[in-house]
Length: 262
Image (cartoon, rainbow, N blue to C red):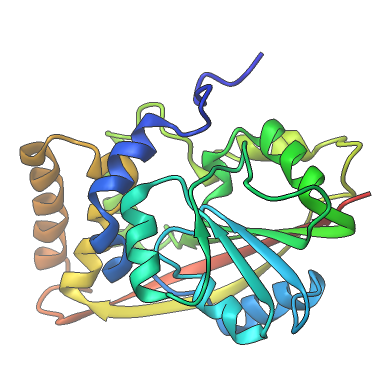
């Protein structure tokens, strides 16, 4: 039985509404990825000049522009039109196609690696893995990466409490439900994990954009969305570690996963 969080077309309606309306905020507010994590993922997945790499759920290209530094031949796939338009404006030299992880617009055995940044939890994992196996060459790699906020920081934990009220049925990385498809998979070897420390500093406005671009917040009616963002602003204004700060530093743990096609 398919998880109720996923839909026949592959694209969760919360993601469709939220990301369609928040592409600009996503680009302004989402953090980058630590160089050490990107270099490690590129190394274990064989991403280098001459390799053909496909990125699923590429968004506005936050991760893609780091992959481009490897010299690999890149192909991006993104189901949300607003994200594709922003991606195309920022990375005109990288082809980006309308498609999904469950229906990848690529030929069989045509790529060396399939990657997803901050995205795999949105996919129907069983169907996405079957598609990854189809498009990967023998011995090809799957690589996944997420930035995870450090909620041991009190004000960060407060923000999580504010936004989690609106989560409802939205898939989340931290649930780890997406990992179930990898367990005992006959098509792939074991899923490995390595974590990295990461700090991201940005303006207060960019920090607010980061939460305005959370899918299930962006999908709210405007007045309700604005009220949530106002709550976060009020918290930052009164908390002793953030009040009066023109820039906000957020501590992350960056999780990198990889596995190989059998």
